[in-house]
Image 1: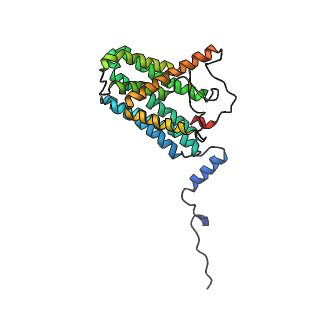
Image 2: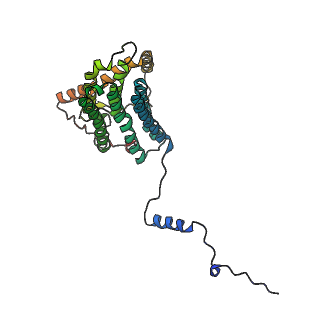
Image 3: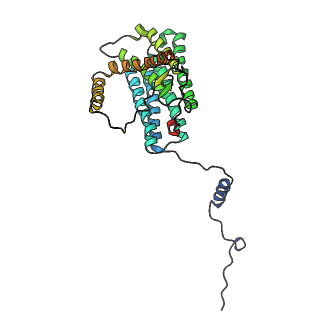
Amino acid sequence: MPTFPRRKKNGGAPRAPRFSRLKRFGRRAEDKGVPRGRGIYLLPNAFTTGALFCGFYAIVMAMNQRFEHACWAVFIAMVLDGLDGRIARLTNTQSEFGAQYDSLSDMGSFGAAPALVIYEWSLRGLGKLGWIAAFVYCAGAALRLARFNTNIEVVDKRFFQGLPSPAAAALVVGFIMMMTDPDINVSSRQVDWVSWCLAVFAGLTMVSNVPFYSFKDVNFRKSVPFIVVFLIALGFALVAIDPPKVLWPIFVVYGLSGYVVFAIQRAKGKRVSIIPTDDPIDESERR
């Protein structure tokens, strides 16, 4: 007896697989040139997230009047911020997302956090003048980061245009660390105007045209004399002896070095606002 195939439902048409319409929609969008979502690189952005966390932790510690913890959190954020870009370049994981995320993290760690820490420690007693100085610093950090992102293609990579925000943060929190050191133990009321001048100086220097050496042209893959390695080890030993008393003078020297370079360039009749270069710009520097 002949057998006949069983009729399928829906007029014999095969049943469409689940989510087929969504897949077809994705293919149509891709055919029209609509970019599909892309992931982000984990390793460099993890370091950036760590720096952002340190900035947030510094704010919390400042609100709890634990200024030593707040200052060390900012210094740790500096270390993490210096590593994320280099790791991205070494692992070839640069991205525009990483560049923007790094700038936002820097604003929190080196803009808002140091401003709030020095305000809570010393500037609160000055009333309106105190929070105005803290705002000048915070606004200077925001403007400096925005200008860095837009001027990176026209500024010589050997120099920063204005004081870098991590160095400005170290200048501010390093002063607090030294003043709160048990060997010095100076009351914040005794140096409130020094704190005011320091915050305003750091904020204005960040938005100035003063060139600061960036150390980006240092080639770590080159061989160096033995004495260089010895001097590096000696520097680490000096910092380890008494970090609060050693770190802040170092950043004070760096904060004044730009004005020395500015004066020398001006004396030679050279342009110092934006130092031009003929070298091609590496897009990875944006990370």
